[in-house]
Length: 452
Image 1: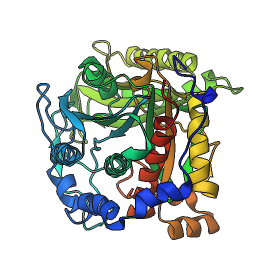
Image 2: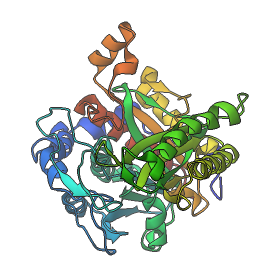
Image 3: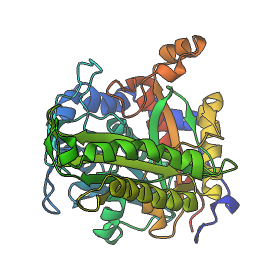
């Protein structure tokens, strides 16, 4: 850790009953925070009317003022927060100063994905947006649970604001766009985030997943993989499908590349201690069966827990793409464009120690202090590493408990909808309350430490 040795300071957590009292002494108040976002105000309005960052044409720093960002701003202003909006588009930050002490930043991501929702929920998204990367209008849904993240952070904001008598420090909230692109943690920092809000002593965040609702897990060290995604275009010479000898077929180049790319991990990544994933998630070419097109396009994603391995995989993927283009007699070199990049996410050991003690007290047997690493990726850690501070990122479950228990009994856990599925829909309770509790307990563990 940088200047804050949290592990050496006394841990002064509230008793479980004390925090529960804050949470539930006015049950309607907390439930109101939840229902006002997910039910009374109808979540369908948030999902359908918002402009989801990364899925509309952001032409400037104030472009796109989505419904949900407006709503969050209005709710936070009602609380004693100082609100800063329009940070890199419609990023939002809020500060609650409550005396001297540590500064804690809680972050939630707020963007969605280009998928047509198939959950059949009454508030299922029917929104469509123009994808700024290719100009195509696409259906959008919160298939990665970011609506749950934002709602839990709103609930935590209200709870922590109402509990100011038990802590003295500074609380910063961050609602971040474009996490799915791996871009806006850095973009918000570059847009002057830490000129508007205090530099935090620790950055905290969480993610909902398909595990059993009510569970929470964290780990020390590597948590999520580093990643890079590419857009690739192979260039051929089109013509009639009856005369392939007169054409240069980019479909064959792309198809060969897809097959050859599978060997990068199986033949080049060491089997002893290294990790790697290469996925071709998009392959497009042509419009008719009797026309050889001029171009074939694909998108490739690469991941690893080790930076050195990821760098080697990146080089190998580019080598294969270029080689298959050459082998296919392409009329020009393939176009290779970086779509997104994510850092390896590392949890700070001393900070995890503080969070672990808080979670053990709050969640008991529902808490896992040795959560497995996950090959997914996040740009969350940039908010901490950009200013040399520690971070902690944890996971909480969103699958209905009865559904999860039944799937486990039948050996079908692998069939449950996961993040980025059009069927992914975290059950509202106890998921939302668990996410809010986790944020509150982790924040209070630092906010209630002795002043610096």
